[in-house]
Image (cartoon, rainbow, N blue to C red; front, side, top):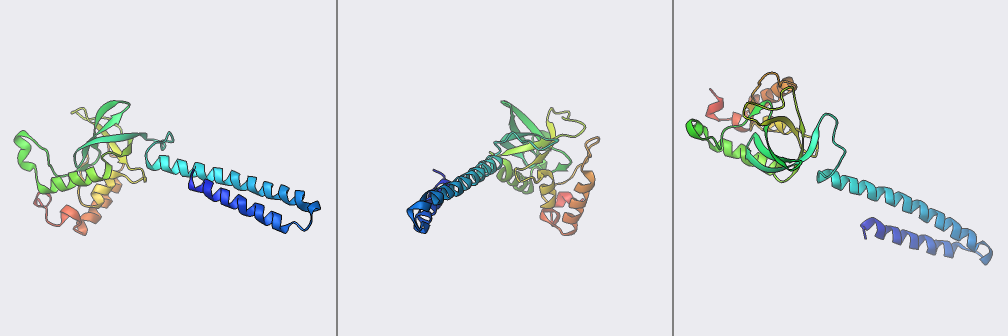
Length: 213
């Protein structure tokens, strides 16, 4: 039984006791009981509404909802974070690699000729993204080009609380702006966020040599 149901039972009991106590005679007992029952029914209706709201909130926080925000798809569960700006999601049973639009985090899993770019900052950004979304559900918003030359799905990624991961990484100084036409829907806002982070030497802007070039 939910907590609301327990409270309801207590309230109804109180109403019944008050009604019985208030009865001055047997003749008006029925009237008081009818009033008490009506009040109890009203309370139950309201409790049912609150319980539904509670269920809806739980579902929304857990990503189990069919009410996908307009212009987005999902929610999809993040099954694995690859690095700070790339991860895997389960889209209708298909493992799909997603790359954040408009931002770039330092490397942490580069191979071959680019392996020298791997750095501690890359691991920090990767761990941040992992802590933020791995095992959770996210919404995806697409731009003009839905994927890149590597077959990755390009997206703006939203957390369950409505914040955009692309913006968060810029704000924390864990990513910098990387604009590739034609996916520039939020480039102006991204630029403002990065400018603020850079001016305040937030995150990697404080002393990351690769970003000081």
